[in-house]
Length: 305
Image 1 (tube, rainbow, N blue to C red):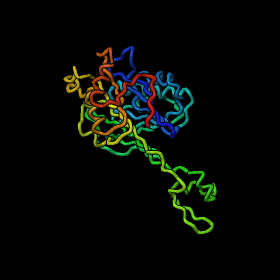
Image 2: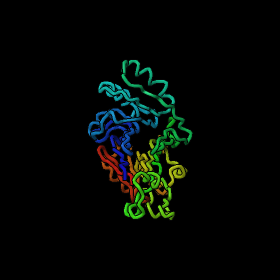
Image 3: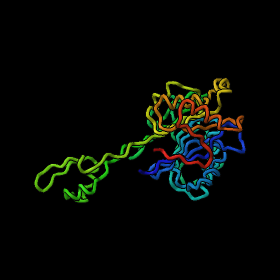
Image 4: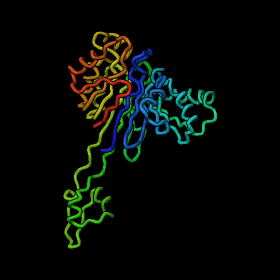
């Protein structure tokens, strides 16, 4: 299967700590690299995971709290210093489109590449990116300011050739793409060979949902039903559920409930409050509800499968 990986650059919350960077991740899928959120210090974290700066095609910003976007202008400036020429596409709540051009004019004048800003309606579930192999759609969330998550869906691939069968029926290599696309084959004797004899099914399409800062939304499971891997913020544990309610965040147990109800394959926990020095508590509480839960940390790479 082609690579589909999540690189964790930061999994902390609003206040800086020595343990964690602010929120940021890299989604690597079919040799394309996308960034989700860009907290302060993200470009340094990007160096540490050895993802080349010029490989970043687009940046998806969930909301405009500083721990999710204050690293953006500095990173754009660095891209310019490194000689980037390819456009950088930024998908974010519309308020960023009102502010960012002024900041770029002041701090990043003379860039040799275009920064293309796409306004995102955080209240609608809609596809905002679409190419041959991938779609990205918004996930409306409920935070103190407009906020959304992002759902990366791999498109279904082509079927796999069974070489021993194509050799047996003397299918020329020039017809392999048609066979992979589902075409039957007619032999020189007029026999019709069904595609199922010549191929095996395509690999299952995979998906990744990033649910940034949000209060617990029981209905969220409907949008992300059957997702392969889910990242859901888990700022607090059960002992501070009252603060989660007050500040529109979630607990690890609530994140696990969403994963279980959605039928997710894997749950990633993150956005940990600086109030906790032992994050095993998050994992313990989540696994009481959803066993395949994992803690994120800087430098970790998770394979979506």
